[in-house]
Amino acid sequence: MSIEKLKNALSKEGLRYTKQRQDVWDELCSNDEHRDAEEIYLSLKKNGLKASRATVYRTIDVLVKNDLVRKLELGDGKARYENKIDSHHHDHMICVQCGKIEEFMDQTIENRQDKIVKKMGFKMIRHIHQLFVVCNKCQ
Ligand SMILES: [Zn+2]
Ligand SMILES: [Zn+2]
Image 1: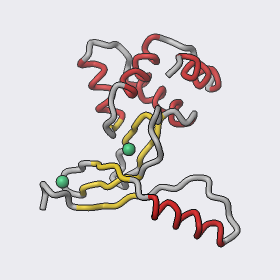
Image 2 (image 1 turned 90 degrees about the vertical axis):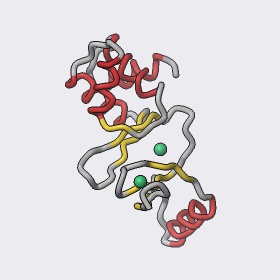
Image 3 (image 1 turned 90 degrees about the horizontal axis):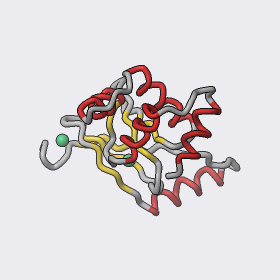
Image 4 (image 1 turned 135 degrees about the horizontal axis):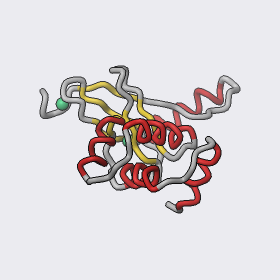
């Protein structure tokens, strides 16, 4: 993604563009997993990068707010994050035992949701669809 999008997002929030914030963004883009902020912070640290915990958390918030990163609330009080670059809409399946997250996309479900909303005379803005499962390894 162009640096411009990151710069725009930061300036909208009154934040300066810095190497540390670029590192946070690069870290999110280099990885397709669904990680919490602490894992992202620790991964940066492991790679020898010096962003502080506060910078990491704050930058992630800004990226979420500007629609560059998706925030997943799984009901366990620990949000997970994934970049939205080149990522088409998908929903998630979460194993309640090991926490593994699988992505899925089912056009029939998507169409059905749209239909239901339209029938009510409403306009769909977004949806969150999460299935809580026991994965094959945990069964
Ligand atoms: Zn599992
Ligand atoms: Zn995902």
